[in-house]
Image 1: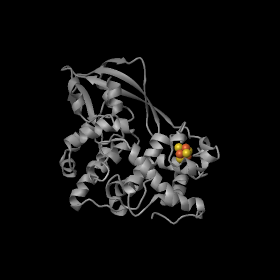
Image 2: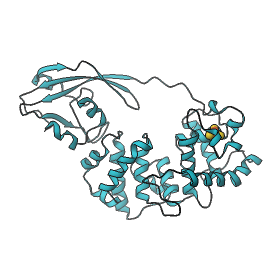
Image 3: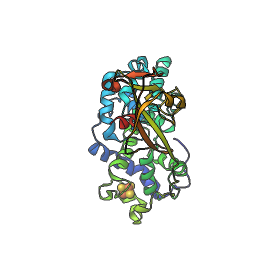
Image 4: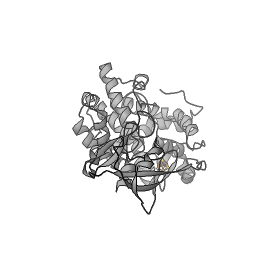
Length: 347
Ligand code: SF4
């Protein structure tokens, strides 16, 4: 169990423990989606597949992840294969998924697993892997190894907030409150299915807007539903306004028709990836003195990061100088690990 229960030992809770968990399980086994990382009922999940999928699914939808996951597993079928691959190649297969620190961490985590020489199933050991925090460790532990723990993500918090009418606002406070209630769904066995069932319920039925309560296996016991208050949960605090940054990206061509890209340092945004020289990313202003034929793109490019919004002006330029970086033919840009933003600019 993850924590002791709060003072919630009512008949309602008892009946939930004994009845609703089973009901949820039956519902899940009937409706569950076939996903490439999901083991068929009664078969042993592949822990590596679960780990890769959990990294990819962070801040990314299932539909987006499916083709990436399939390509990734085809190229790196095992922990060992991924650990031995050059990071640049991992980035190329991650291109378009965004949040590239996940690719770097996943790569490092597989190297750590090779050093351990086994796949740990307990949360504390899983959390020693790069990029594996509370959620991913609990997800791998429950889904891959059927351990008695329930991962908590946004979907799970929403389901719990409505089911029990939890009053804490979305965020760390609701997470802390959910920790107590999620224990109700932990059992001796079948945790692998129940964990996925709650996630599936949040994704397919208990959706953020217009939840399909008439299809919900927990509707009879759902406090928000029975109090006609579904839309009021989870409670939401007003969003803080994100800072806005402006910058300029230079698409620089040499006399051979090659384009300049530069590699980002190992730490920070877009670490180890290739970008066009851009003023907000370690830009050397002396470069401006070496450009000719400057031409500005009419429209600006906007991109949303988790902690700021970026507005980019794009300038095309030529140079006769051998500027530092990689000079790449336009058709070869796809071979370099470049963030989605750079592809957006190039398009
Ligand atoms: S009854 Fe509706 S609000 Fe309650 S858990 Fe089910 S889908 Fe969510």
